[in-house]
Image (cartoon, rainbow, N blue to C red):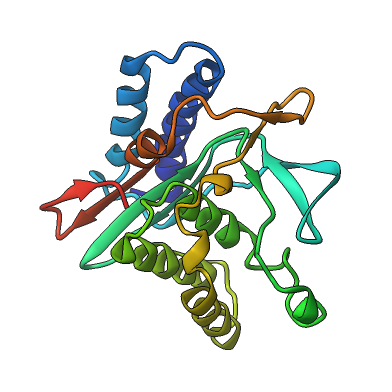
Length: 218
């Protein structure tokens, strides 16, 4: 499958995701969610190459989180990574709020929250937001996907190792924490209550294959 064909597959995924996002603030149809999940997993059934869709966000005026600017995702954002032993697909949905990389204020002069690693940080945020609290393996997978995504984006080996080690050391308390799953209305950018829940989001927005014998949430 070439990149144009891969783009068509991703287009189908994004259309499915948009359908779910439109119903998320109302009464969600279980069949829509099931179709959404199967579509995200379906990208791993073919020969789609490694892929990351464009990240489209809106910066929320005057909103800060620990001194970092806050943005909201406007369109479904997907990352697909293929490896010999384990392949995965992750999709961060519209309305999800992110502050990109959680860089301590004292070192932001050296590493910006929004740099070449920004898209990888959004994927990492989503995996932490939907993670099962206390799951050491789930957190490890999220951190490894973060490192793989930085490599895909061309982040230098030294920087991605520094950031990977940083999240391994300091990210434990944030994984699966209730206040990590944040959404905003796309019209007003006001905060909005999540109507789906962590378990459902994880099931339908993450998928992996292990030697093509297993499939499930990251």
